[in-house]
Image (tube, rainbow, N blue to C red; front, top):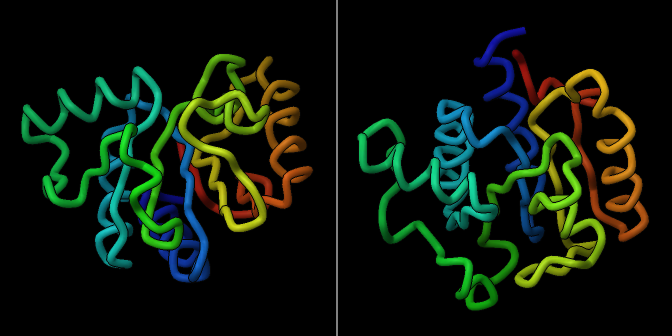
Length: 162
């Protein structure tokens, strides 16, 4: 499996998510993966919103350094997330390891100040659980399923390669 296969899997799930909001959780440090997500969002005429302190910081710094290319008119400020129709939005967030205070965990627990997830959402966990984090990741996935969210993760699809 390679980053190319991850890109093809992401493309497939973006295309299949017609009428749905897409939330992708990945490592904030994986700028190449973030760029892949942004590129797929652009190909599907979607805007992107970076959520989570580390994700927002890395996206800003990587953009300033020219390592992450995101057209300015494509970025949605977290405060304006409700102004974009769900089916035109990709949220790139932290929490692929189930960390309790991460963006995705707070969304899964209905504790996020900006987003409430439901049956019109697709969540892609683009990371493999680090040993020791499996229980936290499973808890987040279970909470997402309880909300009716479509959840795509490494056990189902090639959405991550280390």
